[in-house]
Every structure is written in C-alpha cells, then in structure tokens.
Image 1 (cartoon, one colour):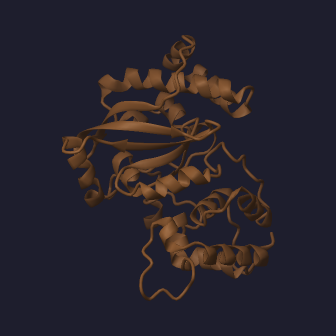
Image 2: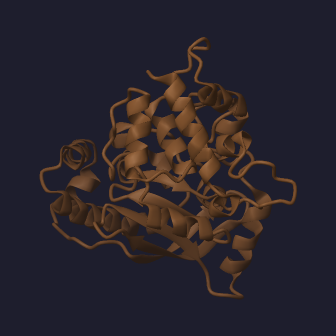
Image 3: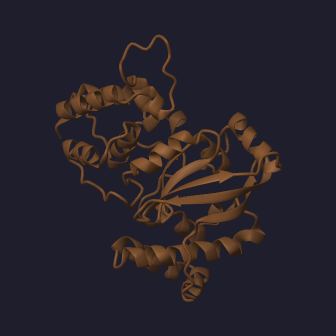
Length: 301
C-alpha cells in the first residue's frame, strides 16, 4: 500500500472541494481553500483522528482503509470515476464495479442533486435497492441503513428475509410493497442480463421466501418511479408521503426522495423530522465500522 501517495492524493482532492459544493457554509474565517480535515471526516463518516492518519500517510499506526472507507471518501471528496479507481489502486484494494454493490461509485449527477435536497428525505440507491448515500432526513425517516454486504445489502432481500425490515411500513401495505419490489427487481434482472450479483439474489430469495417465489413466477415487471407510502415513524406515528425515483441514464442507480403536498399533515411531519433527529431510532448491531467511533456509527447509513 502506497500510504504516502494515498495521503498526498487525499490532501490535493480535499483542497479542491469547495464547502458550498457539499452543503457546508463558507464562513468568514476559513483559512483553507477547500475542506478542513474534520469536514472530510464528517462527510465520510470517519473519526477525525483516523482521517488525519490517512492524510499523513504513515505506516507506523497500521492504517489499512477498507473498501467501504475508500468508497465513503470518494463520495465525500466528489471524486470522478478515474479518481475513485486511482484511490483504490493506491490503497491496493480491488476496484469495485462502478454501478453495483454498496461500495459502488455514486453517479455525480445524482450526488449533485442529493446535495441540493436538504429539506426532504433523499437517498441514492442501486437497482437492487442497496443504499449508497443518504441525507440526514432520510435517516430520520427510515432509520439508519445497516452496513451489510452481499445479498443482505439489498433492501429487497431484507424485505423478504428479515421481519424487522418491514417494521416501518403498516402491515396492510406489505403485500403492495412486495409486489412492487419484485416487479422492479424483474426489470433490473432483465436489464443486467446474466449478471452474477442479481442471479444470486434471486436464487437465494426463491429458496428462502415462498412469498417472493410466488411473486417472481408471475413475471410481472414494472420499474418503480413513483409510489404513495405510509411510513411508521417511532415518534411521529404514520407519515403519508409521495416517493419519487429519478433513474440514472443506464438505470443502475436512482435518486429516491420523499415529499408531501404543502399544508398537509405529512408536510408538517417532515418539518419535525429535522428537529427530532435519529436519537435512539437507528437500527444497529452494536459494532462500529472501521475508523468510526461508536457515536459516529449511529449516524451512518
């Protein structure tokens, strides 16, 4: 691992990003042209000390950034595809696919739109419903997305295999969501062709869930673009919202956001979300990802 080059690369990329580009105030006393180390750490969900060690590029402290950490840094620093790949090469980590999996590189156009959606819950997901990045309001509304790998990274997979995944939705709405998820997954599977990742997800779900197998065999297909949802929030109760999806050009990633008509009860509840925060509402397994403190882990997806 070329830690000195990795540290130098991170420093130059940090200097290039302006605070306004990532939703941070410029401030009258800013002494650096780009972001501060602490700001990059916050955006990537890392401790400030851990990120500082990365920039220093010293091997003495045994810093070994994981693929998850590198992907988070690529998003925080707004790296393009070539820069993201370079970061992984410097860290001597396998470069993950650009569009798939929880370590996928978020398409810049979707990430730019997400940055501007500060007043509505929003997240960028893959076509297998793996959360790539989300804003605070999305975490407040839906809870923190667990950091899973493999099939379990897909919310569709968890929907059919983990009863806890359905807790934020009224029981009477579960059949509708099941049909929508399977029809959307049918479209993704056809679009990807003989893709090993989606083939594995489908095979495991057919084996583990009779409900999924029955729905899959109907061969219903429909790309999810808009839906009306009821969210069961632990503090605010049931929140009725419209859910929209903006797909990337290749259909492999999408920006998902929630909104409500002005003056509606849902709109008022959305305003309260930013006040309530995520305290004691996040689902966590009690462990913190690499480089995160226990407190910081609770704010991650």
